[in-house]
Image (cartoon, one colour):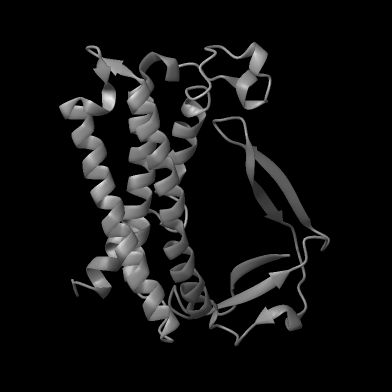
Length: 231
């Protein structure tokens, strides 16, 4: 199944007159084509609809109320995009690599400039985790995520991207090769032979997407300015 937001009232304002439909992917007229990412992985597709007919019983909720339902889903999606647990794991990996790498005869993590970057990132991640816990607590009290989900989405994706940038910086030139052999588990044919560095180029490129999906960070800033700051 795929869910789609479709316009059902062409006279209504742009965010009104939209309905929420569930569509069986086996319905005649649907074509799916894979999109190969920069890291050569197949994660997403483009979907084409050619005169696709959907029974009215596949409508979710009331007609023309689809955007209301979508905003509820987006709030939860953006909260999840913060991915605190994943970032904590990647921070641990970054620290381990930075302890192994040497600069002027000492671990890179002890370098004042690089260590300050890691420390600042860890502080941001701690603040993000506390904010996520506040949102989760509010959810358990029966209140769905509001515009604060946009804050989580922005900061969470910025932290994820910064983690990949610091990983690449930590291993230096070892991160330059796009090591397809390693990514395909053919370690004996890997370019560098440095297992920690092998996936980092693909990881870095792949994480450029995080500030776009779920509503771009620029859109999230607009939401914050309107819903929180009242601008």
